Amino acid sequence: KQEVTQIPAALSVPEGENLVLNCSFTDSAIYNLQWFRQDPGKGLTSLLLIQSSQREQTSGRLNASLDKSSGRSTLYIAASQPGDSATYLCAVTSYGKLTFGQGTILTVHP
Amino acid sequence: DTEVTQTPKHLVMGMTNKKSLKCEQHMGHRAMYWYKQKAKKPPELMFVYSYEKLSINESVPSRFSPECPNSSLLNLHLHALQPEDSALYLCASSRSTGDAYEQYFGPGTRLTVT
Image (tube, rainbow over all chains, first blue to last red; front, side):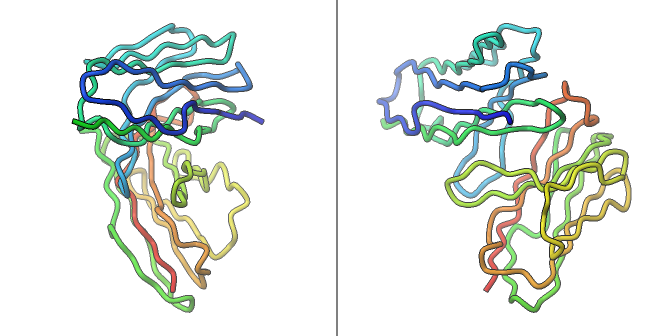
């Protein structure tokens, strides 16, 4: 059974810092990995999708990497802003299902 | 347009009521999903529809009844729910159930069972 773990569970940083969110998964037989953002009480917004054959994806200030063999992914956020405050969820697709981590609650204070 | 819409946004129902949640997408996606999300927890898969046919039921109680009338529309019929069923219900869609495809999520319906 696929298990996804995210570290840290919560992170509080001052505005402007660069930060890294970590995700690990137990079964390397994945097809892709997605990073999502969720604001309180809202739906999920897809940030980045990395196919299993890819090593990284970039979108604006976000960069996600994937090391499938070691079962790890990182989400790098450059020059963080208060508007980045949200819960960030990592999810892997394997055996036809999307399995989520518990999320990292990010707070960026001015 | 990468939008998945869900109605209603909020729903309060008693344990004897019958209600329905609606999800719609116009991206031509042929796979649609229902997830349940409790507070401070990640989403949990409930059902998967592929080409309007139910392909996965994650052992969901029969008081939840999904329906896919056409390729753009997904419903979740609710009957005799319990207070512990209160949660955010999320709908998602993808091009197909092939593992490589990105899932797009709707804003969710906040359900409260009294």
